[in-house]
Length: 252
Image 1: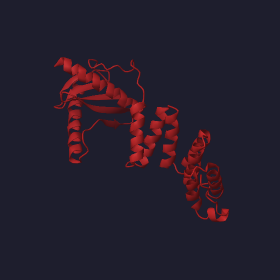
Image 2: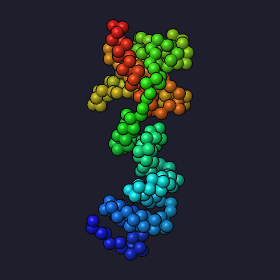
Image 3: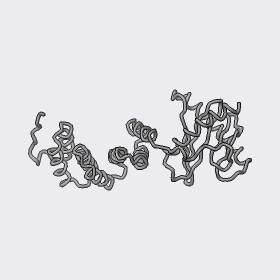
C-alpha cells in the first residue's frame, strides 16, 4: 500500500484542510494516520460536525463501532441536522439488525435531505427487510373496528373499517375520500412520469396510515397508532394487500 506523507501539523490543520487529508488517508486504508489527523483537527475545531463524522467513519473502518457511535453522536450535538451522522448511526443499527432504530435515523436524515438518493435507497432497504411474524396482525376484512379498510376506486367500501369505531357511515365516508386520494395520487404520478404508485403513507399526531393498491381495481387502507415504525406499517399493509387480493378473487 502506498504511503501518503503527512505534512507538518500546522499546515495540515490550517483552516479545515485536515478533513480532506484525513479522508484521503482513510480511503487509502491508512486508518491510524487518518485517526491521528482527525483527532488533531478536533483538538482545534471541536465544534465542527464534519470532523466528528470523519473520525466516526475511520472508527467504523477500524471495527470500533462504539467509538464510531460516540463520534456520530458528538457530530449531532454540533449539528442536529447532520445527514452523514444519521446515515452512519443507521448503518450500525442495521448491521446489528436493529431495524427500528435504523429506520428512524434514516427518516430523520430524509427530513434534512428529502432528495438524497442514497438516503432514500437505504430507507427502502431497511423497510423491505423488517420481519413480520405470521401471527402478527392477521388481516381481518370483516372486522369494522380492525383498522383495515378495503374499498374500490369508485369509493365504495368493500369490507372492514378504520379502527376507531364500527360506525359504518364513518367507514363509508373514509372509503369515499380514500378512493379520491388514490385516484389523484395515481394521476399525479402519471403526469410526473413516476410510474405506478406502490403505497402512500399519511402521518398525524395520533396515527399512521398506509394506503396500498390491490388488484381488481381496489385499494386497502391500514390504520395504526403513531408509534408504529413506518417499515412495520408497510410490511403489515403488504401482507394485508396480498390477503385482500386473494379474498377479492374468491368473492368475485
